Length: 210
Image 1 (cartoon, rainbow, N blue to C red):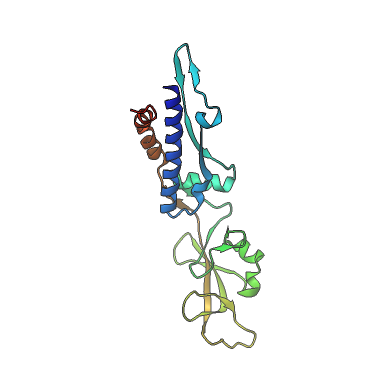
Image 2 (image 1 turned 180 degrees about the vertical axis):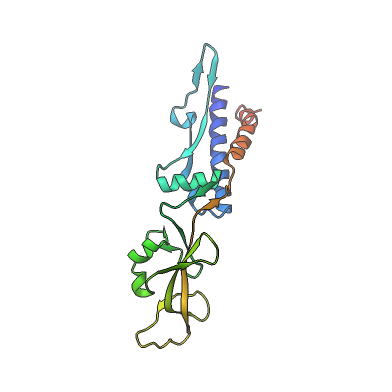
């Protein structure tokens, strides 16, 4: 029975991890689920924990393999939901016509825009009021974009001539600023854990050869 309990709890922990990773990937969270892993008494010591003269316990544990603040924060947000507020007055979100990620897979922000040389390639950011209360916009003036496909914004040449296949935009929206935003939970780990635990009797019976 002790060995069956070790095998069953290890199997349940592995099942919970694989299911959680699959649901996170299906929810559009990419490889974020790879930060989730498991351990068990079977893998760590191969022994159960004694409880009194005749009792014992065996466990499987699901946990994060990283202490990275950004990764942990993202997982908490996507599994519990969160309200995101900026450190400064605005939370800046890159527009759909501006690339979302920069070198190192960092999110595009006004600071990354400036540090990455985009002011030289596209133009300096200018803040103007947004269309709605509590909203601001960072624009770039006098740039060109592709006439078809992805915008690929670029600074207007010094000659003032627009190259073939591109169109002039007097005002290009690079970032939209908001005061705060809510991130809804996309995955429910507790439901997955409950489901994995509900399979323990079956796993124990299978480990016992019944």
